[in-house]
Image (tube, rainbow, N blue to C red; front, side, top):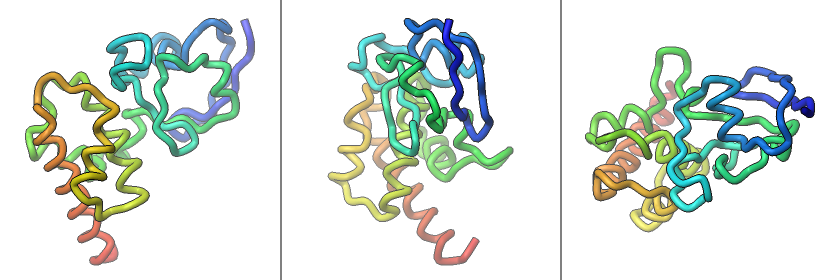
Length: 161
């Protein structure tokens, strides 16, 4: 076992971990943060996406010890208290959640994209979601949700709220 120190959703965490454990397994098994999903175990589906130091990364293929000292944001850390992030609200509003398995990763990627550019074009939105497999929605509702979230974020920035 090795001692790991990192920040999860804004909270410092120190825990003894097996060097063979992935970040995904650490989040789900050690911290009970089960919003991040395991769809493939080899980095192909994108459902395990979390933010590491502000950038989306695949947690199913990342050894947990490589996250030493990092700031990790999971889907559980996106909302602020009881207030959903605009991407989460838009996903619900546009019916872009279906079975929900890919939703956490789509939200993580959407939040990252909109933090960089709150007025993305169609190609940028498609690129954003292309790394995550969705078998239910056909992607159209997810694309619409991200455009809606962008609009809401621009409006909120304009209103100063």
